[in-house]
Length: 47
Picture 1 (cartoon, rainbow, N blue to C red):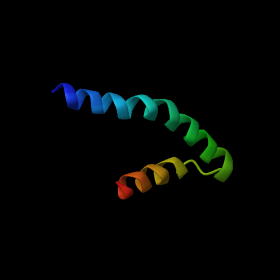
Picture 2: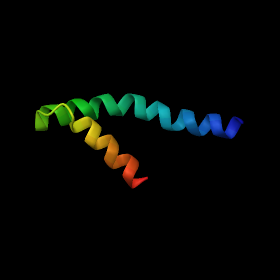
Picture 3: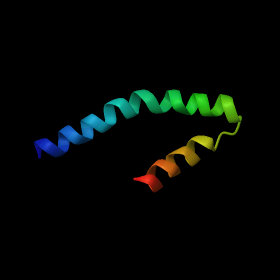
Picture 4: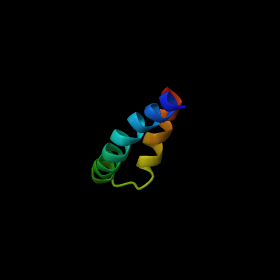
């Protein structure tokens, strides 16, 4: 139980900090609001 909580915390901490920044950069670069969802789909497809 503690290991799983640690893994979730390890992934959630940087993800919660970096994803909004990445979404903003993608929105500024492509000017398409669905770009962040395409980025998330790519991450899920890769993993």
